[in-house]
Amino acid sequence: MNPEAKLAELGLTLPNPPAAAGSYVPTVRTGNLLYCAGTIAVFNGTQTHVGQVGKERTLEEGKKAAEICALNTLANIKAAVGSLDRVTRIVFVSGYVNAIDGFADSPAVINGASDLLVKIFGEAGKHARAAVAVNGLPRGTTVEIQVVAEVS
Image (cartoon, rainbow, N blue to C red; front, side, top):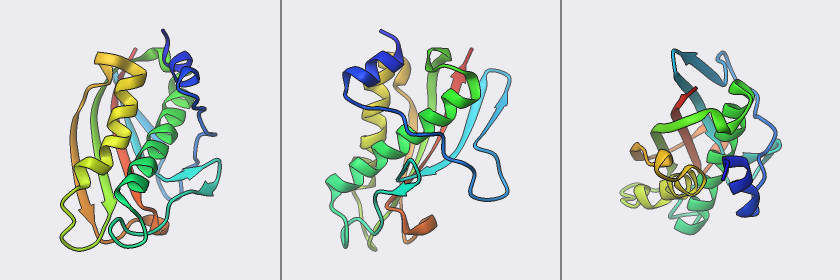
């Protein structure tokens, strides 16, 4: 099953590719690697999750925010290469969780993105990863992720 059909099966749709919010581009391709700029919890221009996990947001809400970030990243990948069928591997995910001091469950939050990528791409969605708690993210978003994908 192709990745876009898998998204539909999961009841998910890709948002419009988010535009860069500064002096950068959403993706850069070098060879067969596509470096994706960080995406935040925004869906079609509407911010979905603001605030810190452990204060305004629960762990489960953080996981949902991470999933939305992954959908934004997939929209940028599709815009860059034309089809998610061209993704041969998700190589690396960096996840940042806006959280209270001492928050130790950032890996569980970023699983929202990682689990979705595995559901969509199967074995090719399994990736190396970093999951870091921070005290602030752009626009007060709850989560931001960055992805490196191998594409054909």
